[in-house]
Length: 313
Ligand SMILES: NC(=O)c1ccc[n+]([C@@H]2O[C@H](COP(=O)([O-])OP(=O)(O)OC[C@H]3O[C@@H](n4cnc5c(N)ncnc54)[C@H](O)[C@@H]3O)[C@@H](O)[C@H]2O)c1
Image (cartoon, rainbow, N blue to C red; front, side, top):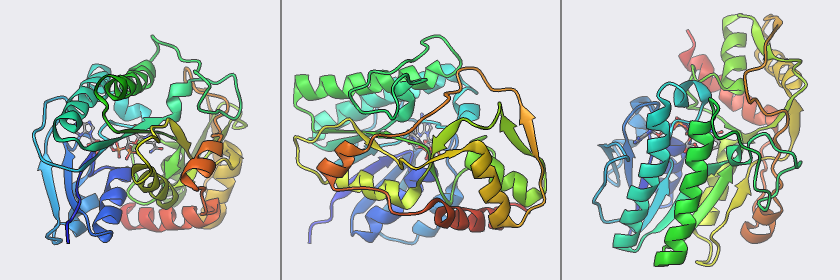
């Protein structure tokens, strides 16, 4: 039996580690490439005994020469604390990383999936956001290295497709949570859970009435794999996320209930460019990929809390 050879860049990160696990379970031969900036070896340590799994330390801003059938390009720090740490490197990772991985896909004829983001919509004036919406992005703010880097990566994907016939799959991923999230990434789900488990105050930015939608990682991985396996004319962009909307206060209260924590909610000033509302329109994913999220927030949070209990002392 032929085993598909699949490259996952950023494979030791939160989403990448779940993807590697899923692809191995499907019988693929998986090469995980990561520079370990935010990824952790512990996320993939349990896969190392699998003879079909291989890991390579590599920075995607440099070219990579391997023979593969499919590429999932996930390498990029995803949370503001991490992507703002070295903003120039963040843009390089998105842009040079895209050029290098697209060059590889072109050379070996591989299909290539891009982990784009809802951040391409910026602070949206359309709600919920369909893929046709071009976004409202500040090009010179603190978030721009990530937002504009990802937008430029999308441009490169579509130009490689039009100019070279590269088989592309661009997914715009909305807020995702689950086990293997970085405990210090400053993202709202991990923040609230870690604060609740430690009995620290739960920090609510602004009035806490801004909403987010949260997709459990298993649902996301299912959407990503469906997209990679879709017909060649399915290029995207396709939104993948959970349209269920929750305010920050609702999320904090659910975390308190599920952890049994006595932490207090405290207010902090809203960071610059923080979007007020973000919710995916997943009509395309439903129609084209026959995909929609299945995991309820409380169920996903229980799994995530169980994971954080193992790492928060
Ligand atoms: N988690 C979300 O809610 C979310 C939402 C939208 C988009 N995404 C995208 O999905 C992808 C994965 O996100 P995540 O949440 O797993 O983040 P993560 O930080 O856990 O994973 C990113 C991985 O990429 C690696 N990496 C960073 N720069 C690299 C480089 N130059 N070369 C090689 N590896 C590098 C990191 O070490 C890490 O393992 C990212 O591209 C992110 O932009 C995530």
